[in-house]
Image (cartoon, rainbow, N blue to C red; front, top):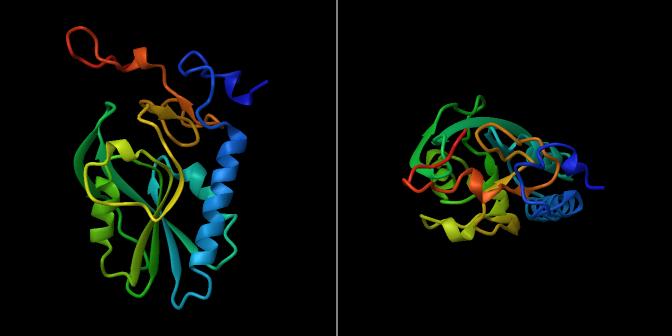
Length: 196
């Protein structure tokens, strides 16, 4: 059976959007592309993971890279409690060793509006280069002009959970990527969001 269905099944559609094998293949593809792109790099490669949701993807990704790098984590405040990006982006932590001369690779599990990646690219403009890597690219939701440099897969316009992505803090550690049941967050008749 599907390991994903051991728990959380009452909240998600029965068929995962990306099962564990598909996720692993996406991570391997992206790790290979990054390793090739940064091979022979002058200067240090720094993976900058965007908390909180990136921790699973980042752990799997960095262990598959074949090139020297270091990993840093930053906290970025951009999501409210609902399902829509607020548009406000605030970087809450600085990189402890600075960015001057370093090649930064921003790593996030999903890009939807693109505002966070755009704000971080601007925030770290003192770096030698700033590129971005996302596991999922929700192209249909883009609100600003940015295209991640390394993408695992294009994500349909669904509310996805698992492999680091959560719904109000829940379901983040599901091993596959699933679609949240629409009735859990779709507007009620009065226009308010159902949210637990």
